[in-house]
Length: 373
Image 1 (cartoon, rainbow, N blue to C red):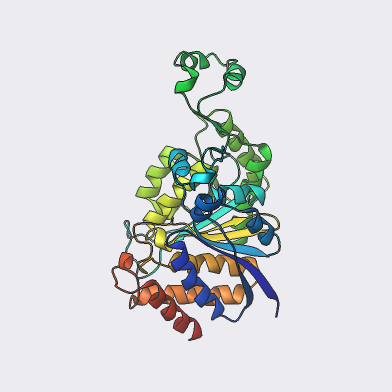
Image 2 (cartoon, one colour):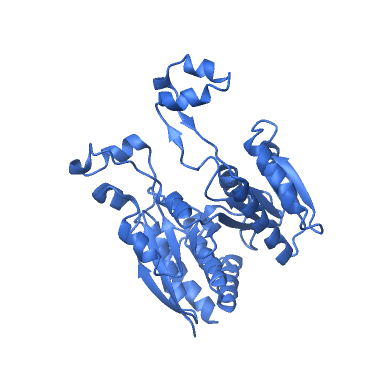
């Protein structure tokens, strides 16, 4: 039996609770794993000035993949105030650790399955099975931002006559976020979406973009999508403006299958789809690169319920399903997924967001029993 060395990153808030539940369930399966704890999150920003310490990066490079619970992100001003006094004034800048991980390890594909489960009430009452492929390293979340805008940056942008009205407001009064997209990044996420669709006999791949307004970046993504689609002539395609797509997802989500989008659009669509299929407590994500992957529940650190032991761990279980599939333990992945389906269908044990009154660890114990049956 192959031994898998897995980095385990609880992070912040309910991340600790759902990851403990996930660890108990994972260790009950017939799979040989070495779980290696790793530091990440707000605690380490406050105490060390880095939410993703160098030691964590070094540890991750010794593992096959990682599972992440949740990380807290706050605006820059709050981040500065919460630093230890001796670290303040040193010019430290908070960066989202998960975004850094995606870029450092080139985890270009964020894969988010969103499907309905028998026994789980939804807003539409329709059967939905959508997989969102979100480009993970570029786009609006590329991290190139300025406030105030430096004169050199504004001077470079003066080539566009539209900059004049912003310059007139004063550079100290404007902020700038760059939406940077490459042909390579667009091609990579489009190919990933089509390869998945081909493997799973999907009925359609839909591009979510806004090329009628974002003519250059959206236009590039649209052109590349069409080029990639030409290599998969048996798979139907569709192109939709992001705003219209959101409306159609609410009205007729059952007509969608695989959706591909740039970073921010994919993030928004993923949460919308999660809301249509039972909420973020059931939503997982895989951040996948060529040689490494990080799996996570899609919910945040939920500080309002942290420490109460009531967080829903199902999204973490489903993230572990994705992880098991990725490391080649498909039979154990199926075993765990069937147990999740039984848990949700029977509705005997569950957390408050499912209309039940069990604790996080009680749900884990029930899952262990279901996995053993």
